[in-house]
Image (cartoon, rainbow, N blue to C red; front, side, top):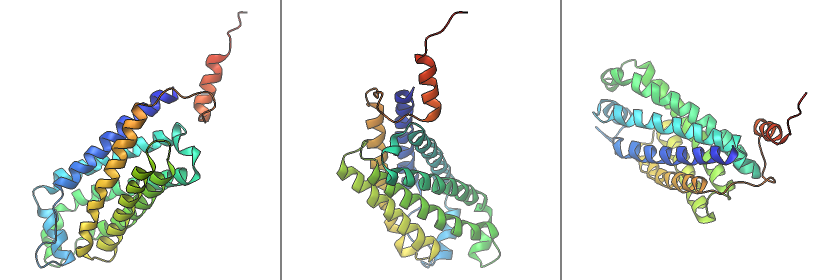
Length: 233
């Protein structure tokens, strides 16, 4: 059971990494208008590609949330406290980012009002959500990438950590401090996609685990039940 769930986790991580890359490609790039934070955000919300990019991003986050949950459930992260803690923090970041992306979609009708300096509560809400979300997502991902040594080579883990930290810094600077010039740091997110695809393929190709591998409590009960001989009355 555990090895099959790990394979599902692998497929999910690969799919999440691909969707994340596509979302990044679709996302509007660079400062807009006069280069200010307000003008740039308003232009992004009005860009025709914005809905497709954001929905793709939501799909990526949802797939990654499922994949990370499976990594935890099957015991992959339990070999390293660093990886396990990072996976938990990554789950928090993904949850916040999904909510933030949903608010982004809902905030699109407020773009013109926001650009004119009017009240736009949904647009205002996106900044704190994105700041917290990217910080938790990026640092959690970095810890997971460095700690989960069983699924990727060490250099790939380091690259994944660099990508995660880069996105954390980019999110805090652009959304928290409104420094639009820090936006290019999000390009480092391609390194997180590399880690996801590599780790996913590694899990899909994994051989059956032996009895010494850590097994979650629920699966352990199933294994004991399956191993116990039936007794006729």
